Length: 465
Ligand SMILES: [Zn+2]
Image 1 (tube, rainbow, N blue to C red):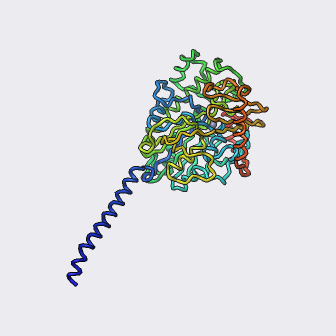
Image 2: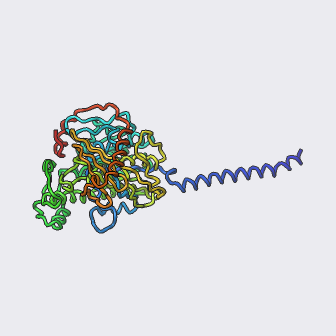
Image 3: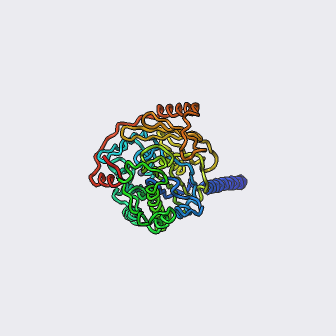
């Protein structure tokens, strides 16, 4: 008995040692794997900054000495910058609804007119970005600041805290945000150890009224040879019906005031960063805009007038240090892609209805496959649709007008090529018709009357009945 037991002991010891080695090895492998892919072992603070009416060329995300947006240029050093990002439409409601649902404007259906009294409501049948993050355990805070994104219009879906839309300048947006954080976390500073916040902050500054900001307005006046005294606040009503040239003094005055707004906003974003330290490693930051703005490139001003590049091209940067290598992506992408990208980065399921695509492969450089872009605008009784495929862009406007542009040769869309490239027109037309036919129809939408103060703010912003 004793002999047998003594013989078995070394065998048992060997087995125990092997098991121990296996367990230690497995733990080591798991630790290494998690270390290799920080997406798995860190849940970042997610911050989405959207800026109303910010055209892509109004800021500089490179240290090119232009000084247009020095803070954002600094932030972009550690970000993936998409140099050809598009909005699917040219005004707030359809664009932001597309960002939040990853659906084309014709599928979410919130596309109707710009009247201030009655507005269509984003359907509660969609699972929005905020809802997905809330389901994943995030504490969701929304700060819309645009009356078109009011709670009554369905944009508060999925938000634990949704501020009112009365705030106007970036300074007050920041103050309201700090108060919201204090309310949600008993702390005005983001602290990821207590909860995982998702912040969506929407700034209104570059939207009309354009307010001149010193000292930048003075610098612009000198550059554009304009009397500084002429650079006063520009009201939304001044833009209505204006038809001008790009070089007209009126246009120059508007551009200068708009540029000073953008520069002011850059400073306010710097202040926000100083307070909340958004440049930390565990902050996944996405910065973009709902649409651009036009300054008589096609004779008109403001937005929601057409589907030209100055209205559709928006900035897009995604920054998550230690996970995303800083890079520059030239492939055209869309606001519809933001939601699936964020879900993929966080390892969360992408809603099956999503019409956008994850940009992770593009950011990692493992794919550069071009994607066709589609655009849509309804204004009153007129409808615009457009498609971009490689260098070609086809625009159908009201009254059966068709325009074809070669964006490589003609990035500012000056020369209509419809008559000399009929085959390209047919090709793009077919793709556009196929896409339109394939889009699921929206569910029946409710309409609500906005509160009187929201209606009044919309009128101040240049919208009318
Ligand atoms: Zn907008």
